[in-house]
Image 1: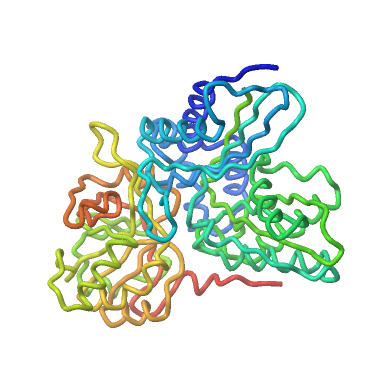
Image 2: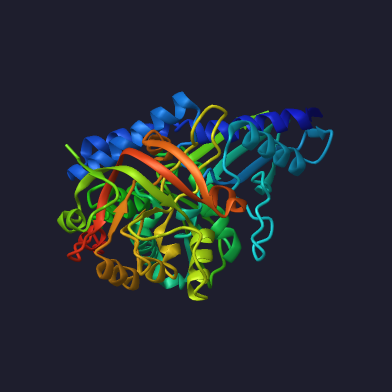
Length: 280
Length: 181
């Protein structure tokens, strides 16, 4: 049994929250640079260059790349031989968000109650998914998820016989219709299979993957390529200004499902794709 | 080279602008988003006096991050305009000359823009750090309890934007509506 302290988790989460908002990750940086080189519409190319310039300013000034500093979503992989000392994991994560937000001058963007809409003032609580794995480490993957693109995400229960073609059509449609509202160029997270609820979790989990790295499953990687090509043929372009770069990546996670069902979820992510992780 | 537009936006200049023009805005704008626009709308509906005069103004849909000590403002990019769709026809009728945001707007808002010869400008979503460099000053004008959602007056210097919808009905997003194969 290995012990990980409450404060250690709190500090790590605080650091992740700030790093996610101030530093565009290398995978996103590369994907954007590749798209500038490819983009044929000059207004769109200017927009992509401004996005890269924004990332430089954000990093050097410790300024959030976007004023919507996001809802924190955490995927925790808890080694079965880890003991968390000093409090609950959930409380440690939320304490970390509180600290990260206050010290980083991030914007409180969470309402405690979805109906009365009162802001919690410190961006807590996080949405937390946990999984128990072998070993004595704690892995925390964090997304600071913007509201504008989240609002354009969709779920559909397809009929199993609609199959691959049905999946392509639905995902392309959702991404294209998200259009400028989702701040393209976007990253498209897709969950296929599982249950009604689990497919949406998979679509979020898909966003954690390194952008530009295909699925390890060849038939899924092929599906990702085909959907990506079709989304980019839609012509929506960066910010909806027209052009070749509507999506930077399509990332699909799959799971076993019932013989009667084909659940498909599409979680849209903007170009300010803030994902970070730490292993404790 | 982008054309510099100095506010207040005159009718003549508004009519010269065309969808797709890349411009830089200098001068003073009002800010507001969901809660502030909803409040103004309900006050206008009840025929109450508004806490700010909208005539001739441009409104920027933004809710910035808090400023660090010694800084004027934090990150300050546009939010999605469509959430303000229900409020904008009435608010535009109070004389607004333009709005700055991102994303689709409704046909009703477009009609209201035409009636005022007003312009829909787009700033690049997700570039709040860059855009904050074009903001020279900020002061709260109304609803301070709404914090980042309060109505502020901001002074812009060369704030980069694109004309999304012009007085002739030209519309960038309509030109690039998704083609689905």
